[in-house]
Length: 192
Image (tube, rainbow, N blue to C red; front, side, top):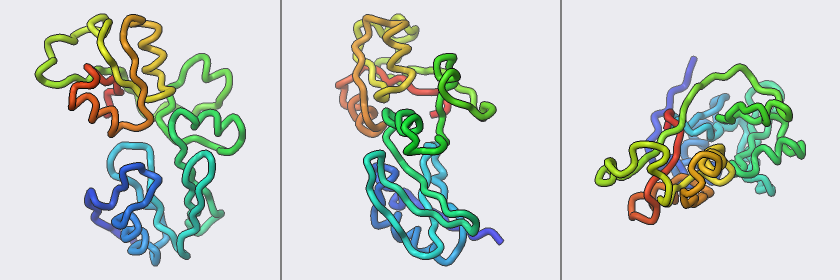
């Protein structure tokens, strides 16, 4: 039988791999039930419901959680995006489960599953500025926020070389800078 847990925002920590009080409460609630608790927001990150307590340690590539699901145990790592492929190449990770864009360059290095999502690029701007950025070329001379090491950073360099690129380690900082006017736009995928 499925065990349903209703989660509210307080269960989710500001940096997905870092637990807060609500996260720990959810894990304790699930401790007697085998399974994996997934973040319902489309983030590619997960929290874990553990069977026999919590074994947690911080490594260079990010926080790791020991997860036992009745079969072989697994370690789930939550590295920052800009280091995730390097962790795979150095064999610190065996597999990456994330929205990794398939490119010809990446296909030379990595095996990919069949695509499970297809998305495009979009610019996000404040409503009051919606008439100033309508095409990619309108980003020239504008401060544009992108995730560090993402395809969007390279796309801007290749397609709008006059854009002022601001890179971010996390989404909340990027969105906050847009909200307060430190940047003019954010490039994100259409699934966001």
